[in-house]
Length: 438
Image 1: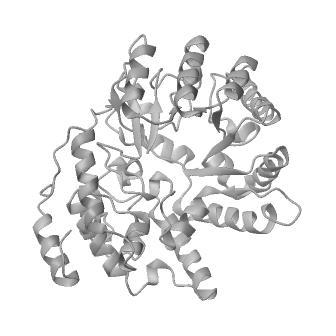
Image 2 (image 1 turned 30 degrees about the vertical axis):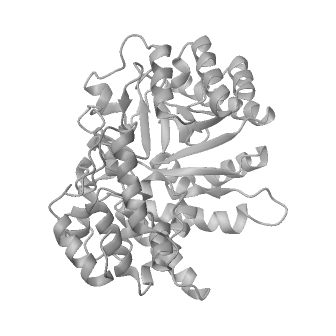
């Protein structure tokens, strides 16, 4: 689970048209006029784990308050994190990042016109802001500050006409000492953004496959510092049932609890990940996880927006609910074709190596049944758990009971064995097939 501290809410120094937080801004749901450091730290203490400052743009927080927060985090956990566009980073920020062991994630889409979507009010100001982000990255690396890069893929950096420039930029980052990046296919929150910036499914696939080949053939060769795109590691790990460290988009997210992300707002209250807030409302976090989305999509034909019959379902789980077709989390992801192709290609690569991908395993239906049973009990079972269970090395019954017990005690929640009307059906089928009932 990631704990995200949001001192300034969705306030930002830039105005990126594709930002998934715009529905919140459109609805007028900015943060309260003031934040309370005391209340935020109290909220963090209750969560009991290391955290990342998030926004909007968290560097809009008063710098003295930032130091108070980072010192508090370092004293307890010896580490901190922040996700920023990098424009506002100063020498003092860098000193704090070093002093308090802050991992810095920088959101940047490329050089010059590729980053023009990260709009600062005019083209001149936008290019100036992009330059500041680049300079900040160099300074962070020079000062040996832990660094990550997030790149959103859209028409300004993902079309073939931009490809050589984009690859040259990645190689430049690699030469500076950056060892990887996270690729985000554009999330569509407004139809106008989809029309102006979104790649078509075919274009998205072409871009991802080209990047995959680029990583293998040019970025990871003898004599060079390795550079990896995390999206391809996730595809590989899911097909091998090695999902303990998978990115949250490959897990089972309930948009009303977003258990991969525990947000703490400016007043110390619990909040959800903002990617699912299409109505512009950051709903109060529910007490218990629900997996209605995954269960419904597993049983809904693909022609009606579901995932029924897809052999990659348990690896993909229809991805982030914030990417649901027509901006509706009840539908499967609008990037479905991306993942089918990516999983399909890696599936063939594994077969060629003599390996059996999970998608072609004779136990695939058992995995699906056990995953669905876990959902019906209100528990997300990782593929690694299920694999170990089928090998006889994991106490599935004990895990479910302990999970529900911890949830009921830690979150004041009532264990919900009867959480959905599917429970009885899956319980019967599970007992009949496997001889016991968790």
